[in-house]
Image (cartoon, rainbow, N blue to C red; front, side, top):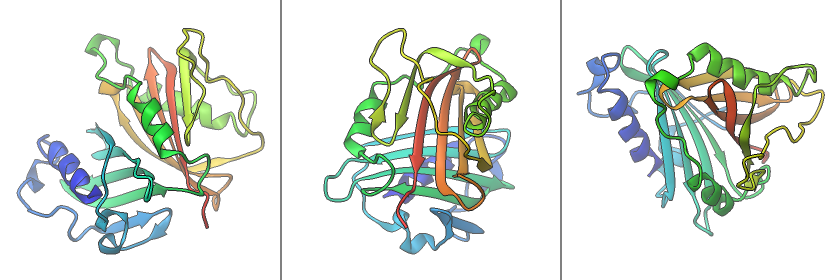
Length: 240
């Protein structure tokens, strides 16, 4: 279950000094202050986390400054396929907020098997300490990409090679000249941004609303290397 994956993520974070006071409280998701699924307040017991899912891929990272985690999950089951992104935030060592985006058939460019294939070919591993970017640099790179949708004069730190995974659509060809600068729509405000940043892997995940305050629930995740965008993953909930 997704619940089990998130429990393991919480336990990993709870080994840090920031979360240690809650390491023995048993069920960290019990008593969660807020659970939001696809931008709607929900109950964990009846949400996606309560379902038995065959998880084909999961990757998590940890924001030890903001006490938060991000987890990407892919379920490539042909009957119940999902691509899921979850941000968890902790307060005083206990989970206080869980936000999940659940995409499936009918969502923007959804293709779980394609997402699994391309994700498995990418390197989101730990970056050597001497080569890591600061939190500010990582967030600024992600913000620049998102700002481009509304302001075409925005200078985006494109890396090369760079690949964008949007739903199951992938821009990378495996070439050193691969670029993420392949165009984005115009006149769209990507707002209400919520961040999880892990400098050790050069990554930032940003939950947002695509197209204004009431826009589509969306996640844009970035891998930044030497200040440049290397990978982009998007999850966009399009179903009503």
